[in-house]
Structures are given as structure tokens and as C-alpha cells.
Length: 358
Image 1 (tube, rainbow, N blue to C red):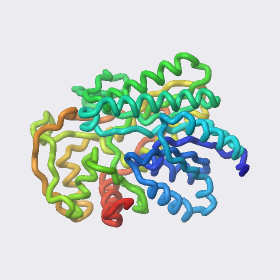
Image 2 (cartoon, rainbow, N blue to C red):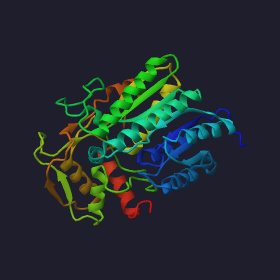
Image 3 (tube, helix red, strand yellow):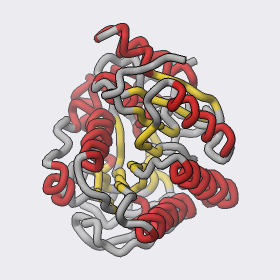
Image 4 (cartoon, one colour):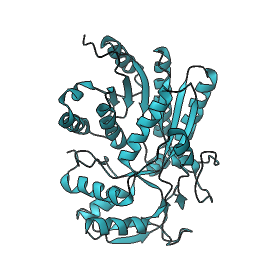
């Protein structure tokens, strides 16, 4: 048995080896938290967590001892319980959860909705059930701006109509509703924050960790990187007839390190305040079209990104831009890194890790 500093907070991070999860783990470890990470590696690589250890050890070698890693699926309630038991044995029971785990391809969710409902919903129900059994009632959930669906609003506030247009978004909406039911059942103990991400891109400035999806990427940025590196001849843009200024889709891009910091700010807000239920947009409030993103990437990194236009993609929307005023008001925080920094850090990761985590 290893006893920890009793002032150290223990956190369960689900899906901690993924793109956003790994960057958040770095930030949490640097802030002195003890982490219990569970990941199935369906969409991620164990190497990412080895890189996390390498990164934090550069700052303080002792920090790496605070990372406990478990391979498995959230639907395995016995494994989940064993992780909570382990934290108790170590002297610091898990008292909060950051929940990233889930599958997230819009296109794949349309082809295989059963897997999305099973993995995302059942996994979350098992997690909440185990938390409740272990007197752990604090969770930050990785939701998504896809729950808003098609909207004619210039910027989306958290009270906008929730009407996702694909199964992936529907599972995120359903988890939010489930968490609301859980909160309403016992408002005096649950602390819940749903973080509705817009479009995370970029990478850690060290270039040790970044985005490296298994199979077909779900987001545009890995494709841009692959064109820049010569692995792809050109970028295929889904539609140039959207009702936007240049005909290409407009998104709110946020640096992954800003998103990681936003998780810690949300978690610490929950810890320091009474039980409550929060929905927060995680975006910059700035819209960027696909063509504007390409132009910025080319200028910052001195590379050329050839592109072609194709048909619109099923399940896509014309615009998704966050109104993040509630985020600023509640957390007294906002994303600070620029689109140029996102493009610079994202390309640095790709160019220094051409094979990703392999």
C-alpha cells in the first residue's frame, strides 16, 4: 500500500489517452492531482500516456508517480470498482471524475448507431452508478456542440434549441439529459458540468503529444496536416455552397491546451462551490471558415495546402460558433490562444511525429 499526501485530490479520468484527455492529464498532473486513467485504446494509443509521463517528468520527476493507468472499458463495472478500491488503498479515494471516454465519429455514428448508443450511453450509466456507490458525486462531462444541430443564430448560447442531426450528437444530448435526471434526483450532493466543445485543434507546444486518431480522422485538422506532410495530395472540402461568406463551413476552433485548462477551471469551480448543474460552451466565440483555416495554416507554417471541393457531408451544419459569455461569467476564464498558435502547434506536432504514436 502506498499512502499519498492527504491533501492531494484524486481524479478518475476516463478516455485519458485520447487527444483532449492526454493534454488534460498533463495539466492536471502539473497542478498536483493524482490521476486514475481508464482507456480502452479503441481510439487512442498507450504511447500517449507514456509521453505524458515524459512531459511532466521534465518539470518534476515525482509527478509521474501520480499517474495510475488501467486498460479497459467503462462498461466493465468490476474494473471501475477496482479502480475506486485502488484509490482507497493508496490513501486518497477518488472524489471527482472527468469523463472523456466515448466514440465520436459523426459519419460512423450514422452507419452504426447501435455501437454509439451502447458505448456512449451504457458506459456513462455504468460510470455514474459506480461513482454513486463510492460516494463520488462530482463530474465534468465531455459533451459537444453537435447537440445544437442546425441553427440560424450567429452565436450559440447554452439555452439554444437542442436538436442534434446525427446519432453521435444524439448520444451526447441523451447523456446530458441522463445527468440532469441524476442531479434532479439528489440536488444536495451532485456537482455536474457539461462542457460543450466546439472544434479542438492544435497540440502541446512541446510537440510530444497531439492528435493522432486511429482510422479515418473525424476532424479537418489531421487532414490538413496530412496534406502539408505530403501523405495526402489534396484536402477534400465538404461543400462550397453553404450559406456562409465564402461558401465553406464555419467553425469555432479552440486550442486543445485551452480546452484542457477549461476542464481544470470547471473542476475547481465545482469543488469550490455548492452542488449544481452547469452547461458551458467551450469555444472562443470566433468563427473561421475552412478556407480561412487553410490560409492561416499556410501563412503560419510556410506550406501549401492544395484542396478540392466535394459534396456536403451528411450530418454537417453550415455554422457552429460559441457564445462563451456564460463561460467567462461563471469561471472568470476564457480561451486565450490564437488560431495562428493552433496552426503552429498542430503542424509542429505532425512534422516532428510523422508516424504519430506508432
